[in-house]
View (cartoon, rainbow, N blue to C red):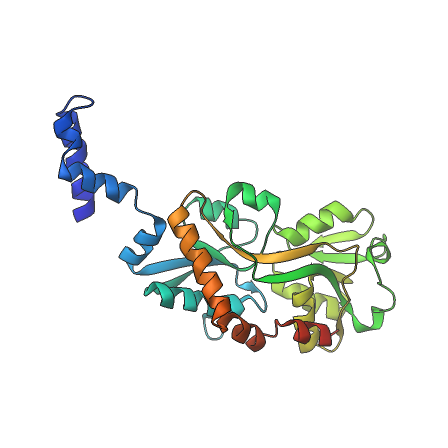
Length: 282
């Protein structure tokens, strides 16, 4: 209420002074209002005591909303808690989806998007993407019995093959750009697609290699086909608003410190994201 009062009072004061009035521009009240209006998001987060993290909750092992515990969990969830700790604020997770993540960011529903967000040029046009913290590639999750049948993208793109697809993210972009003949089955719940592959309801899930590895560890019927040159490489980043250098620079330094201090490696080991863990699973 105090801040709103200051802004309103400064606006009323401006009406009483002509444009360019020295008295107006020297006013401490105006300078306070001007500063408040131009606070970095970093300052606003610290002042509010809360950092809002947008996450889909459907992309293991990066982010998952556990309906039993009613809590989010995963690598990026742990990183989000570390972010809040370093800011000395509380973390508030905001549910979003791959189809609405960008519009939710622009609507200021959260301060940062976390949870396996892939870096690409299209997203960079509309948001600021951090330096990558994990390198990966697209890969097919298939049934173990089909591991000699689907060796590359050409083997998958046939009319008798059914591909389970979650809309709105880079997986859909890859499928739409590369699949011409196979049947594409759109499935809104990303978490259900691996189980549908295992049961034979669809044949393939094209996803990030790390997600394919994760589900193959949980279900011996599944196989994470090795990525090759026909599957796009990708990098995981965090996504924030454009045009705020103070906030961007702080996030960049925080990520560097996360790596330098060994916390990033520790969390990657915990969630099976190291290179040895992902390679040994294939």
